[in-house]
View: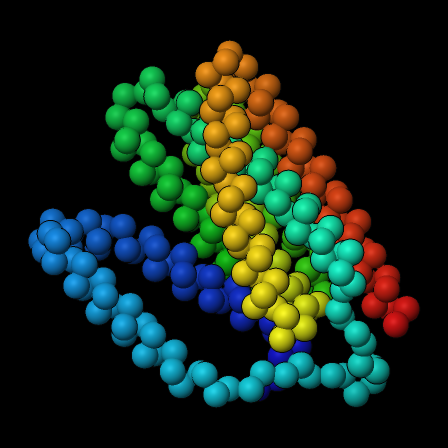
Length: 267
């Protein structure tokens, strides 16, 4: 099986579309199953995981290669180590800013009636945004458009943080929708970028290191913003700061992507 750059992006988008649609369906289904089976749901969970794992077995032996255009010479898409470190640092800085979203939502809902119900609804809105982004990327893919898709995703998430920090429950829904759209666009496009520029033998290690660091960044961010709010800092001002931190990370990421494009063209 051969994949061009736009086909790789489309495949990742289709995978995420199925994932988001499944997430939307899973909330009511799991709620019913938990009510019906109680602790026995753990057995069903293990059974579903086993079925999913078995369904992937036919794909273990599939060889995936890139298809080179006959008019173009093969180009090197690998990044040097400094640029990889810069990517990781920029993404972690961005994740630090975006991870504050949950703290801002909790701050807005703590005095609202039916806050728990609203929080569940907001998560559904976020999943709907992610599904819309995944479907859009699967249908409307422009070749070599990864840079703009990544920047737009980061910009949408940054704007979402700004909305989530404003003193309005209604804006929470708009913010969560943008957070879902931007987050899914960024996740899909970054996965496609990593698969293009990181050698396959190093991709697993790179993603493992990044995912581990990102997992540590999220609670650190939430703890930092929660402590700042408890010490009297304005939620709106903190959201504004997180917004500019996210936008700055997006601009820096765009600059690095341009450097990758320039070095690839020269090669």
